[in-house]
Structure formats: C-alpha cells, structure tokens
Length: 242
Image 1 (cartoon, rainbow, N blue to C red):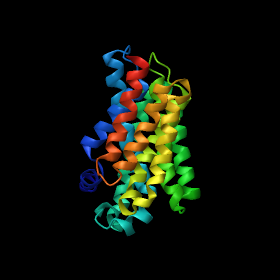
Image 2 (image 1 turned 60 degrees about the vertical axis):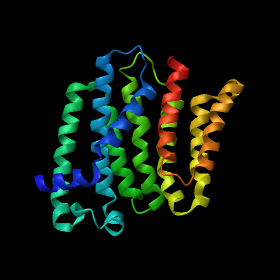
Image 3 (image 1 turned 180 degrees about the horizontal axis):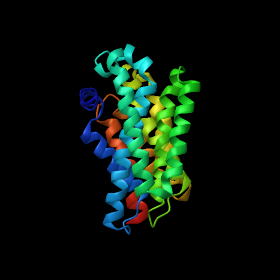
Image 4 (image 1 turned 135 degrees about the horizontal axis):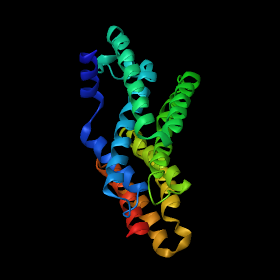
C-alpha cells in the first residue's frame, strides 16, 4: 500500500502548484481582519481537502485516465485494487479529522463527498460531466472556510471560484487548438462579472474587460492561465479589503 501511495503522490500531487492554489483560494474568501490562526487553519483545511477530493476524482476517472495516461502506474489493475483500499483509509481518516477539528463543516463535507460519488456513478461515463464534477468542490469548500471568517463570503464569490478553475482547466483545449480561446474567455468573463461588478463603475468595467484582452493577446503563452489564477483573487482582495 505504501508503495502505491508513494507512486500516486509522485505522479499526481504537485506540492508547489497545490500550495499556490490553496493560498489563492484562501485569500479569495478570508479577510485581512481574520487572525493568523484562522488563516493557517483554513489553508490546512483546504490543502488537505484538495488532496482528498483529487484522490476521489482520480478513482472515478480511472477508466478514462488509464487510456489517456498510461504513465499513471497506480492504475495498473493489480495496483489499482490497493489504491482503492488506500483511498478508503484516507477518506475515513479525513472525515474523522474534520468531525473532530471542524465539526461545523462535517455534514457539508460528508454531503459533498456523497454527492460527488453519486454523480460519478450516474454520469461518470459522460466526458463533459467527468470534467465538471471535480469543479463542484471549490464553491462548497470555500463556503466551509467562510464559516470561520469574519468576512462572510458572498454567493457570487463561491460561484466565481468554480468559473475560475473551469477557465484555467479550459486552457488545455487552447493549447491543442487556439480557436477554442472563446471558452476560457467566456468563463473568465463570468468570473469578472461576479467579482468586479462592472455595472458599479467605469473602473470596475475596465478590471472586468482587461483580462479578456490579455487572454486573447497572450493565448499562446503557457503562463497565461497562471496569470489569470493570480489576477482575480489578488485584485478582489485589494478592492474589497484594502
């Protein structure tokens, strides 16, 4: 089991991007008035939750991944059986920890986990939905974090996190076919509308349209989706909290 888990972590858990994602999602929902303890508590919760739900996503996308990613050795049938056992232990430990350390979010997390499993069982063979289901965790997890914050996140912020990650993921299509640039542009436009509310003034309108121009002009650059991931949370914090 240890060897399978080690291989999985090596292949699928990239610490630096995951830490970066955790920080960006945390600043999107917390306030500068929150204590350092709340910030650390929230980041540990999000970081561990992202890992656990990624494992769940990989379990249910195995049928597709084994064809598209032969380098993922944990999907080899003999090893995959062990990997599923490891997953069960990790989920059990995660739920136990949440129930003890973050009881106010336990029921929400349990429903998110159960709902994800049900959706995978019902729609896991539809490639489009197979890409959508993993994104559902972001608004739910951010809502859980907002419980501890002095700044109660607004519903549009939770939805914006879904569109932000969806926009980032959609750049995989742009790398293969640049004419798909309209997909991330639409998703990031939705994120802009939710976070910056352009109808409130010309400056907000500029902030909403600027990333679309940048995406279009820099669509062939590998750094473009990463710039967008930083742009929205950081600018939102500046506008709302500073």
